Image 1 (cartoon, rainbow, N blue to C red):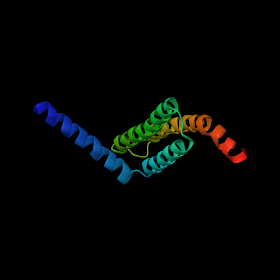
Image 2: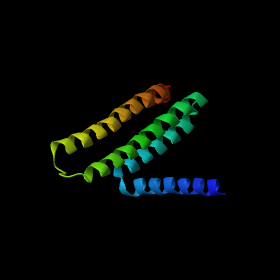
Image 3: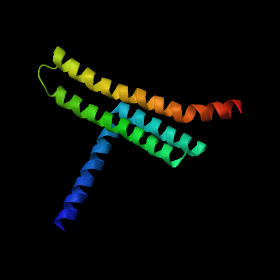
Length: 123
């Protein structure tokens, strides 16, 4: 029973973290919205199971990177002095990691959906 209780508490903590991210992180909310839009598009175009796997990993990676970025920013914000060049560089590097992943996700989305969108638009 102890293992089940630990598992329950672990899952509860994870959902509490998701709620915090959604409530307090604007970029996370934007990325969740974009992910939902992409999922709707994927259903509309009836993508393959392999494409679903790629899309799921891509959306999950972006959301996970954003949460890690938020964690790092909170850790860094607790450091003193807050306005030091080192603190700014750490936050910029963390944001750059999310940006790179977002660009990669855009490329993946373009590969998956652009041909379908063009075919739909121009028949």
